[in-house]
Amino acid sequence: MKKTILKSALVALFIAAPVAAFAADGLIGDCVDCHTMHNSEQGNQVAQSGINGTVGGPIQNLLRMDCIACHANPAATGATWAYGDSTIPQVSWNNAAADGDLDLAGGNFAYSTADERNGHNVIDITAASTTDAHDQPPGIYGTHYHGHGVFTVDAPFDAFTCAGARGCHGTRSQLLSGSTVDNGTANNFEGVRRTGISAITGAHHNSYDGLKNSTGYGGTEEVHDGQVVADGYRFIPGLTGLGNTADRWMNNTADHNEYAAKDSILNTYGATTGCGRCHIQGHGVDTDGDTVIDEGWGYSTRAAANSYIGVPNGTMSGFCSTCHLDFHSSGTENGTSGAFLRHPSDYVIPEAGEYAAYDTWTSTAMVGRPISEFAAGTAGDTSLVGVDPTVVRGGTDMVMCLSCHKAHASENDYMLRFDYTVQTAGDYADIASATAEGGCMACHTTKGVLPENR
Image (cartoon, rainbow, N blue to C red; front, side, top):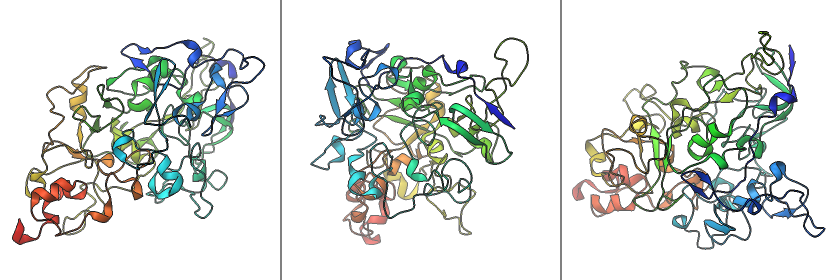
């Protein structure tokens, strides 16, 4: 059955600006820093789009720059860029030193333009590969594949973008205009999916620093909501986390970001298998008060105007698993000897054995904190209650996806936080030296030391 979206139902959108100069109360600065009323100054167009800041036609929400022109501006010479009254984090900038400590916590997309193995290959910034198929994310084995709507023959993984449908940030998996066809399997769509600015609109003006203990969309909202996006860590609805305030957007000091984790990452929304682990499908609504449900644009599909993709358990590893479903192991997926078949994520670090020596936080092997410790705080808190950010607690803190990887891209292959080629077994004089190397050796302290030197 085909159901068509009424555009009148999509008018309740906030005006947004793709900058990040936040106080506790949201965005500050002159309106003209971000907006242009007519895209015309002295007879010239001013709006800039894309990685090279190309001047062209008007941009949604009266913006002077789209997301990429602002957050990957060619004028930036560091991880942040001063523009008007704003300080704008740069997801891609020319880091000649190739030093990850100079980049944002998520890394630097510039590394993936030279070698696609170094980062996520978003079409907004990096060119699509000419040699690799890229028709599905790595770590997907039989879940999303050709014919299932997200990355297909007609829309391969080369369609991976920053925000919205087929992206990470903002409201994901919503149809912006057009219609859906609920055929029981593919939930096909005809029209335009919500991506880019339309997926984050309203979030910047509603954002704040510190703790974001997000629950995401509650299942009753009708369309994209900028405040719901702003409440999500890194503008990801449903993702819990704490953004540092002293060294904003970075992870190089004791005042670093904190990431939520929970043992058993895929159980959420009451579903442990199937699409319900990630998807909340659209629901019928009464749009004009006559008690008739499912008129207009409220349809029971996974690509409706009021559908969305949730974050399993509200954790970073849960979020990553919505694409990379089979990149991790859980305690029930071990070999016959009890050894993991894949590296675990959102798994408690043991308090004994080789792991006991990992007790000091390092940016090369970050840990996730129990999500219950985030729930104990309130929005905007600058630290987690009772948590020393410099300490790793065996038996409490967890290994997660971002323990080893950077979210955007890194100077190392496979988006790693460390150089994997120097992680050498038995190469260190003692456990202290191995631990100081970081990376694998931060946790697996004895693996770098011969038995006679332990």
